[in-house]
Length: 419
Ligand SMILES: *Cc1c(COP(=O)(O)O)cnc(C)c1O
Image (tube, rainbow, N blue to C red; front, side, top):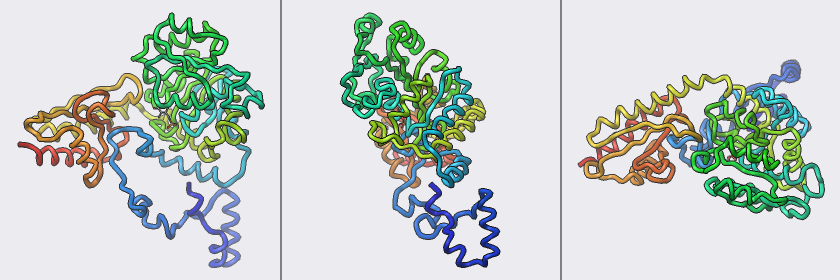
């Protein structure tokens, strides 16, 4: 990130007199360096084109497979500062955690660490609960001898990210009812886990789940990876009593793609760090977080907290309306709007059409948009569309003006396939 292309000191000195070099050296000691001039890879200004990889217009939202989100431009500036010095990573993590807790006004006794993503936060959070600060246990994971070994989760909350719970060696115990939960708690139980996006699906809701955990004297984690906006979610779950809460840094927060947050009780956050990089012989050594990501995450949060979320939501809705107004001019095409209650809580649009008037199935339409120039990624059918028919899109990851391109390409395809 910005290191490889930086000023090459030797060649620069070779081309200038010693006076100029001394001036530059003096400036540098104040933290200034000449802007990097790229030769070779990246010189064209588009690294993706140079590699022959097609960049896409993203109507699906913060999908890790598409690169998550585009970080706020200011973030590069702090990354660049971070890349100039060596620091103790554990010291930096603790200081960043303190700053983040202040920014989010978390209660006394709560802190945070920056992880390599929400998935890493889930894994190291649970690892910390299992091991505490016991070095033997930390080295031993995922062999759970001597430790607790079960995590309770509602059946409807199972999802691909619980792999990060299972990597610690624990067994997931699925329950549905309060009675089943009561019976599942035993002295092997390490934690109760909640998947925030599944709140509407489970019998036990987010506030009751943590109350029950307190009643059973069990630590409780909430995976809220994709659940800002609203920004208040960044503190709501801690205030509700959750011991650990995870967020993705590279989704709507628009921090570095390889970053996430583990917020929670100071002791548990510290134990989580012991199970994470830079500490070696740990289960989390593969989840390295750099000094650059740590400081960038603070900057991203600062920007995210200051954003006018209502104005942004209006802008996102307006983009959808721009597209709707174009495509619904074509006979047989309709558009409707909705907002998922939790997880990607941003304006969405559902586009449907009468297939006897337009000879295209939703998957075909989605494929043609993907193959178009520029390439547009939009969810369809059941997959990625909240179970709705037709196409489903959001607009919060569109770049200014891209809504017009989307409207044009879609309208063109509908017209070409109209009968
Ligand atoms: C995206 C996501 C994660 C993983 O987040 P990363 O920051 O990509 O590691 C975990 N849980 C849920 C529900 C998610 O949506």
